[in-house]
Length: 315
Image 1 (tube, helix red, strand yellow):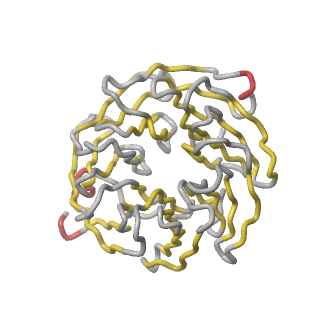
Image 2 (cartoon, helix red, strand yellow):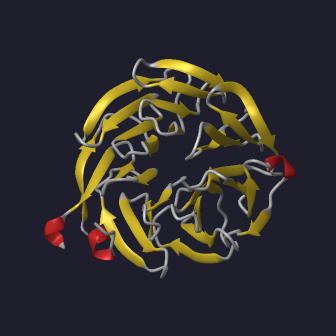
């Protein structure tokens, strides 16, 4: 099934779960699309079975808290996560027996991004300590460190060969993962003409676009090769300066973001036009939103977690 404007407009909330007492910080899908995992401010990690459409287990990280969370490469039973209590160590957890496999100490301030390589056991992390660290799941030791000269966010490209660093909310630097110590091979200025912080970077699945997420009322897409700003998307509510996560659809043709009034806004990456506004009836701000990489469904979360499906009868 092809993702079209009319298909996106037909999406409705199919299931809502109220398992969290505080806001959901992050949602991630496994690469096969069959599982989702969420982290929240009430120290809960919830695993969802997407085919069954329901939660399968809840784990707790009472001691460390849980902020950003990612499934590891090709796995739906292990995750890495950053903490929002005690320290800024990244932890590698087995979801099947709730045991830590490894710790990755090094960052000395809050971790702002975690990105898993799509091809191997490598992952990268950025932090308010103004460093980006490169890790291997098999070793607790940092494999490499780059100082991008400012507060960074980071993300791997879909081939796992390049990573992007958004630095000090004004420039994007591109690094070759095999030669990151030589510094960036490209740098693009991309500051928005409004006061806001960049809160995340994402590549589109075709590798041609980079999406800048912010805590302001706008997100932006750039050509990943030339750095040319293609579109700036705004017109959604974010008056409180919340970090709202935007996402590409898997076909790279649309960008979606939640808003503080519980609606989801969708734009075409080609035309830059808004194609849909979906009402998820979220009682709070939609902090995190992810489209499933394999199935025609997406997740949005405030304190509640909602899974959406297209309503074929509406087409």
